[in-house]
Image (cartoon, rainbow, N blue to C red):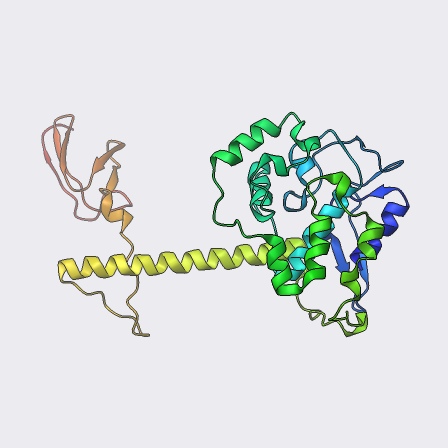
Length: 313
């Protein structure tokens, strides 16, 4: 269980500081393994200490780090755990967005904390509070202002809502610790967890690594865009055909191929005048040193039967 893994780390005075689904591994036997301790740090006690704020993936980052708090403690891992738990319960990330301000806005909307009085004094004293709160206040409530805990209670019961509410507390000092989270009533209520060996694991032939999944999704998006572009081009060509009254010949499959404009037709063909070493236009007659040249349309120089008329040598 993820909570047991985090509790073990905290008992060893280690903060993970990068909890997210891609850093949680499952073996074929259903055993959970926590990985990627590259950002982890040790701590002496639960008193907030000075650490860098550029840790934890944005979607799983607690509000104190979004507001660039210079001091924090292991409760940052509890927030990330609760985000992962909520993602498992609802099937989607809780606070997905692309910047600190937008993630903070989603937290405000989902936790229904629209009034500054609902936020702890420890966060409102931070230097970035006025700037961030001013920005998200001007943007309005948005369309995602559904109470997260009401949704959790409706779909998963009172215990699930209580666990999320106690773990996603805006005040870091009021959040559950790992021991309290591990002993919460949610884990002993129905439906009971299945045995690890009974977990339905994906087949061996599936790419489950983060990079492989990303590449597969990018390819799917690219193929979709290309398909949409082909459909739009076919529609534009059909409109042009309807305007001019022309129809394109169908191929063997009955489809009408997209006709791309001939770039060579847009440019005038230019040929090399071997005798004078000059480039002349194949469609026009030019005068060079008193000689009128009628240049044949040949890319290899003078074509057979080419003639020069005029005076001079």
